[in-house]
Amino acid sequence: MERVNYISLLVLALWLVGCDNKEDTRVSRPTSSTIEVSDAQIQAGKAIHDKNCISCHDSSVYTRLERRINNYSELLAQVRRCDANLSARLFDEEIQQVTLYLNQTYYQFDLP
Image (tube, rainbow, N blue to C red):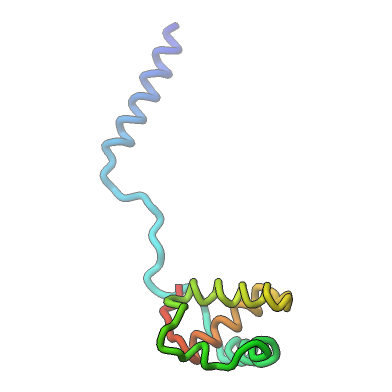
């Protein structure tokens, strides 16, 4: 019985100490970009884009005034949707390259 009380007190004490901690322990996102961008990636993205994407549309979808894409994450998601619609079966690295190319060439969104 004494052991149960000791464990209960220990759990209660740890809980109280945890509740009193005012420090924010959440993981923070880095303020700078975590995506490395090289000229080789941009050129690879352009080549993949020119081979696959312009079969459905020209560059006017990227430059229209009423853009549907408002940030880098949405751009990446759209490239993934296009890949699925075309059944191009691009690798994740290739999708990232196309997204980087489009972002650098047309959008200039902040990278995550």
